[in-house]
Image (cartoon, rainbow, N blue to C red; front, side, top):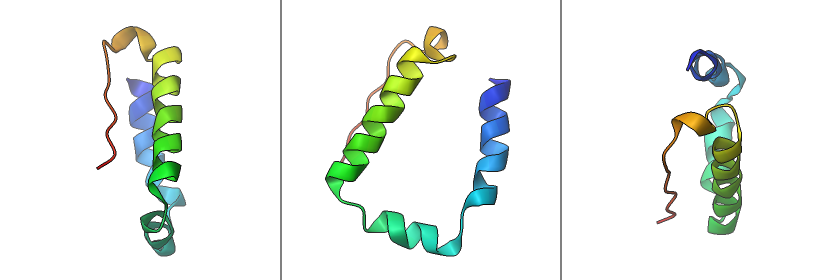
Length: 59
């Protein structure tokens, strides 16, 4: 949990104003690929023992 909080505290430091515009134009396929990678990372990483399940939905 400490690692996650540490990540959240520092993740915003790397964002620029134009990052939102770039991500807003990503296709559904790009988002699906990224979220699939997140799911794989969560299920096999340090947090995997703390997670029962997760669902990702692109709408």
